[in-house]
Image 1 (cartoon, rainbow, N blue to C red):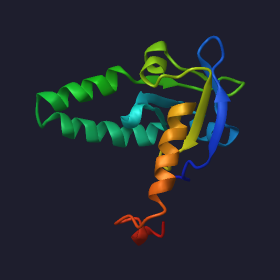
Image 2 (tube, one colour):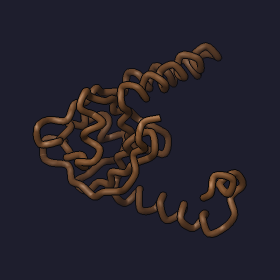
Image 3 (tube, rainbow, N blue to C red):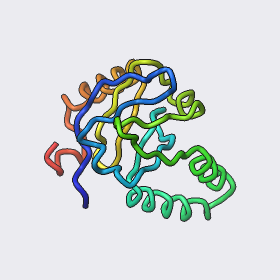
Image 4 (cartoon, rainbow, N blue to C red):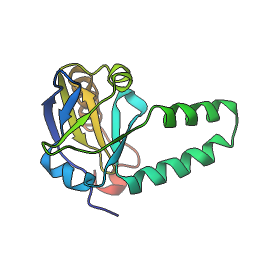
Amino acid sequence: MEQAFVGEFEHSLDLKGRVILPAKFRDRLEHGGYLTKVLDGCLAIYTPEEFKVRTDEMLEIARRGQLERNIARTFSAGTAEVLPDRQGRIAIPPTLRNFARLERDLKIIGAINRIEIWNLDQWTAVNLAAEEGMRSPVPGLEAVGI
C-alpha cells in the first residue's frame, strides 16, 4: 500500500473555484487524480491507482440491479480528472462544489486512501460527532488499536 494520506488543513476557494492542495498531498498527484462525490456529502480525490480499485468495485456493484447501475453512472459522470498546476491548485467544477456545499473556507483532510474536501462547517460537525464516538468503545476499532 502507498503511504496513507493523513492530516487536516484549512484552505480557501479562490474566485475561479480553485483550491491549493497541501504540499504533502501534491507529490502523490503528480500524474493527476480523480475528484468525485462520496458519501457524507464531501468530495474525494483518488490517485489513479486507487481510482482503478474504486471503478472495479463500481463495475461489480453495477451488475446487481438498476439502482446500482444508476449509482455507478452518477459516480462516473460526476468525476473530474484533476492535475495540480504549478501553484498546487486544482479546479473544482461547479457541480462538485454545489454537491459538497463548498464555499470560501474548506477543510482538506487525509482520509488514508484518499484526500477529502469538506465544507468547513460540515466537517466541524462530522468531526465533533466522531470525536464524541471515540470516547466510548466502538466494536472493531479496538482490534486495530484505535
